[in-house]
Image (cartoon, rainbow, N blue to C red; front, side, top):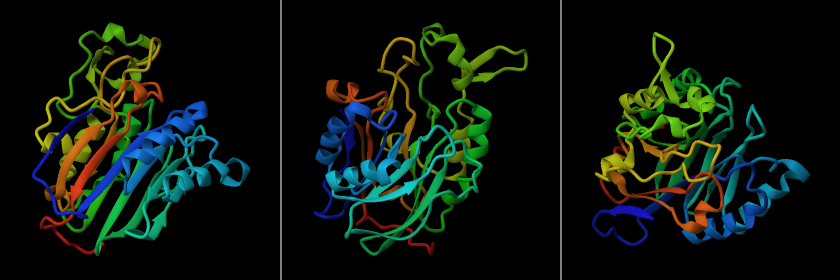
Length: 288
């Protein structure tokens, strides 16, 4: 588990925000995933690939909410049944608005928007799973999200963005990544060959104003969130999972960590990513 922590905050001031791609709905790993997530005591949690959670009248969705003691906001995916769920811990966190699809079906999966109140603050939370196969499509999807990086208001962007962060290292040897998967991750050059890892969507989000917490905290290199799963996949330590903050929330960034242990490595092909905010620091309190 990697982390960097600032000075001790006042009791009750922390907001713990997590993102976790649970891989194909969790399957027979779900019970272990729930034990892990319950131990983290998160206030907000974005889960991607909530596959089949709509079956049997959303039974798995409600079982997860009960296990975590949180309220669910379900956003159906356009593709592969890889639904999104944003969980929030009521009554400290309260939802006053929710839109499960901000793009009218234009995302490969979807992007949801919740307007939440936390400790008398109003925070917009975007939750998404960007296109896994196409760098160009990821960049287009990012265009739906950049407006929320405005200095007016407080916004978070949570999810599996399927893109490396700025400054993240490329594989030491691209031959370690199966060649048929290079089109997902690499820039195609004018001559038809591949270059470095594609970061266009992240460039767009960062230049719009979103802050990447581990870089803001000086955590270099940032801890991986995937790459550990096994042969035949993208066995390359990298980041795919993020909690990004708008300028108004940037001063509140307190801690960032990835739960990277033998236990979490066995629970799926992604690792839980957690950013903690200290809501007692001065914030830009713009209107939503």
